[in-house]
Length: 258
Length: 258
Image 1 (cartoon, rainbow over the protein chains, first blue to last red):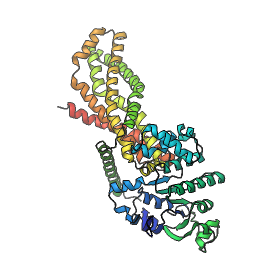
Image 2 (image 1 turned 180 degrees about the vertical axis):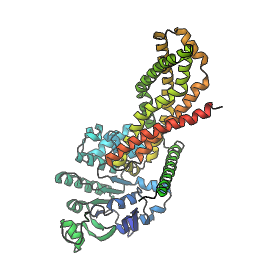
Image 3 (image 1 turned 45 degrees about the vertical axis):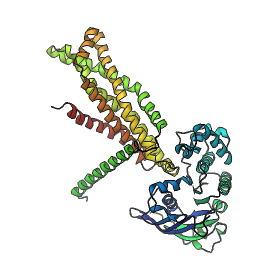
């Protein structure tokens, strides 16, 4: 823990693709060891925000600090070392379909030669058990897994190297409500066990309340509200409440092309 | 209405931008040959994929090309009583031109398409982003081993194509055209020079680089789901085929122009 310094601090983060301004000065603090859920409609800039933090997209302006250090100004080697401490669960799993599950799970450890292939199998079995999968799943190909199992394997891959920051991109999208709750439960368990900081983006209100300590609402490239995730639906902010309840009428108007 | 001069200018700028980005992509791919870590397991996998699994298609193509060449040159040369030159024409044509070009075009269809489709699918399913979040440089992991494998595998395939192409000519020469077996082989060897074979093998290495580079580049830059991957695959094969023929002329000019 670093006292009052947030684990991740975004200031004035901006990004445009051509004429379209996706992020328009995002300011956000994410507390160490807590779960932050970023909410927002499709195209509101949620994915772009976490891709900027992960270094997958370069922002046009603004700063991103992790543990008080501006990661955009970091030398490449330090940035790579920071990435070693980060895990990511992609929306569709993004499992490598040319590799069996066990190699997917231990990919980072194998790529960095931190573990031998023989030991990686045992390690994969251990991590798969943490997400409720049998060791035998390790020998399957990702294409042989159901959607829920792919999410679990993606989660196992994200936590295998014991990161201290984990990102979750729509962790329950495409899952039935029960499986969604199971995945959320696993996320809460593993984040707690690792003592990690979790940043999730989601549309799913039930999921947001289950996995988040804090929540932030992104609308038209700006943070319009931050508060406790448990307050979602009754925040007093008309935009957030409309989004949480899924009301058609309210300050958020869907832009329809005619 | 579009200004035709502006349209030409845009096309020229686009072409310059494409050549520039392709050159930078190639340089970055090659630069990782000098910087660890090295993915030797992946390199061997791609070497086997290109060199071993392309053998049937390259062998059959070369064999039939040699057979057709013997038949055609015999028919043509018979018009001015030069049938005895068939063996010389077959071996020179195969080693200098047809072996490298036909083998490379076959490999472009098989491997260029396969690399573009595989890497393109990885792009549109976030697997390339996942590599970055797993502290693995996607260029080093996906591109460099393929480039090296292509440069080394094609000369091997062309050597096989040379042998089988000459064999095809010999087969037709001795069974159909009435040549004496020993005489045909002697005429083949008498006129063959080291430069004939060496130039073909150098061409093969260059063509191998072109095929793998275009496959990787088109896949890496694919966008827009299944349609984008399909377009990347088509572009990879068409572009590498045209570049093979263009570089064939350039290399022939370098080796043999007086």
